[in-house]
Image 1 (tube, rainbow, N blue to C red):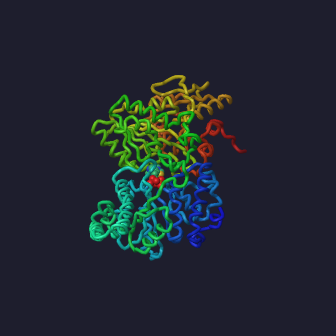
Image 2: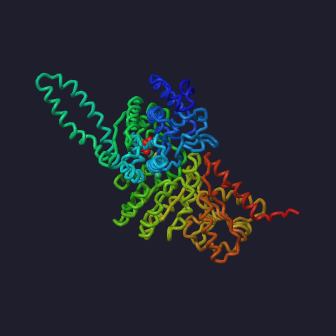
Image 3: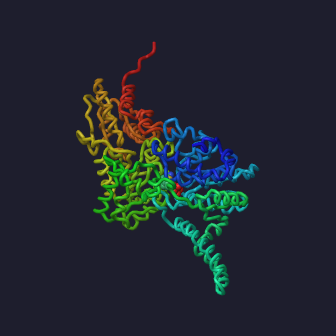
Length: 627
Ligand SMILES: Cc1ncc(C[n+]2csc(CCOP(=O)(O)OP(=O)(O)O)c2C)c(N)n1
């Protein structure tokens, strides 16, 4: 790591002779693979941008020039070149480096939110601010993947950026042809058209060298080819889209050729208006298991089978796998069931359904808003779409869910994976908002299954609903053993009857496990805790009100934000019904939760069995007065 160790910041990188850059790239790849195979994280995307990031930091002078990474999952190399190599071993650990750019970590980091397709809008605003404040010598550079370019926000930004012909901005499209899976759609096809222009350029070069040397017909043939060039180029390279929008297009450039990228970036920097540099890169470059991984080029690191080189199947099915298998089974039974993913087919468990019913699985690109309204359209034609998203990304499509789906009473099932705390990916990935924002949607039905059996049941119940939308949400990881009911009261699952009717504990989803353990712990202290799992947490089951009247204290437990969550709604219902019990809400504090393992973050927030027991004990034990 001699070269990398000599780089304390981009200035050192700029001083490095070009001849040393391949060796530096090698050191970076080695460190990224070594670290990420231990810490987890985004492998393929970072291996693909090593040379591109080197070139960016040699041409632009960050932090004076601003480099904005869309999504930010591909910024590890940027971190290594901006003075953070020493801390890289603690990537994604509690107190360590973030897996995304992080403003608190470095002046070189501008945006950190990890939700895709935002960089061009940030860049647009920043370029406007630089123009208004006379900071015209500072460049604004946005790096955006071909996947992120499928998001609507990117095009809303391009619409503005392209119109400001004299406002400089460099947009670097990092085109590896993939999101997780190959990027889909018209934009992807357009880029791949541009990418295939490279052979065309080589053909021209070959024509120049060989055809001209051919006696008699050589020169005329060359002239003909040359004359056709403009037309042919349009045929091969639909660059007129960007040019037609008013944006200068440079490329395609081999994103692994530092000199070529540097040269394109220098030209872009000098241009004086909006310019798009199209770099073609290979996701997973330089690490064979990633390069050969057809699934997603090891977008996220996962251990591979040393013999087959393939995925190691999980011993216990994850929540995602339980859902994916059940959906495939449902699709076999019900021809009206369709599935929609926003560029996350495998991560949301849709592979089994895709394998059997590819016509009914739609990858719409990183386009959650469109996914939701398109689902509404599917219902108009008699289908029952299941929209599969990570919970945090539903935020993008709130208005579509509210107005386009719910106002129209469309039977759409939303399946929210990674709900609750996700941990290592930091504040922007926690799925802690859905239960709060969805409380305000009139008539919405939300299920939070506690285990694999209730997930299967909830999915079937949701798909049976024909008069409006439903939501089924579950966390990251693996469900525990199925938790049996001791009795059922009007649709409520009673998981434990308290020895006395002191406390009624209402658990949301997978927190039923820790809730039950807490109740057992408190029973040893002669405190009777009845544990209820409503399964469908919205609308509030009226039976809860009846049961609550029999208890002294009602406690709600959820892995969502406390403000406006299930607990808040239950409290409101009980208040409205005049229930005398005191009501307390246990949930996630309403702040951006720092990264750590899921277990660490849950423990910090008191959402473990001992944490819940402690909070209930504190509630019911009368506080001693200080004399
Ligand atoms: C709004 C939103 N939806 C989904 C995701 C999940 N996600 C993270 S990276 C990624 C693919 C990004 O593809 P691309 O921009 O081409 O970058 P690459 O990983 O190929 O370098 C997706 C879908 C996200 N970050 N944001």
